[in-house]
Image (cartoon, rainbow, N blue to C red; front, side, top):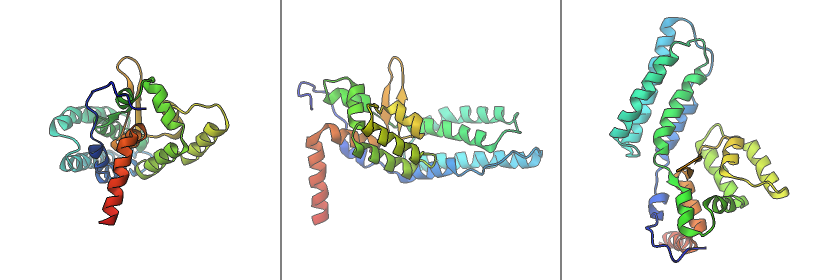
Length: 234
């Protein structure tokens, strides 16, 4: 399904496959393992909790900088927004800690998402079909959904595995078309992101984009398999 007439530079599959997931796992650990419960109205305890949230935010940023997943300019752009939002939330101290956790999740994901790979762009390079149709065709495979499930279970503690089972069953027993947006809404997946409207499209984390790339390009897929076999033999 490769388009021989297209001469655009294609992304390096080695770059996609070599992305480190250790720091991302650390980030999601910080985001999702925040202590749950009601805010104490006592000013001192609330102040201590804000300090803990800020410390965890800065710690996560430090790890991402060390791993060179983000740069200092990106941190500087997002840090002010984070603390401005946190200051606004301080006025509503009766809300649950989950509300504050969402602030961290929103801004940290925003930084990580800037490193996502465009599946729409990949689809345009390899297929004459519309990008949306090509991505849906990839997601029609049970193997693709199981791969996405594995990634989410490893990286996303809020992933709804039961909803994933239901979606896979419906996809193979009914005429339901599984789209990235449906996948995200039903399972609370975070590995892909959909931006609608002009200039929109589907993007995904490097590991997921690599799987899509291999599905699109049999030649590259064979090269990866041969390289893996060679490594095992050495």
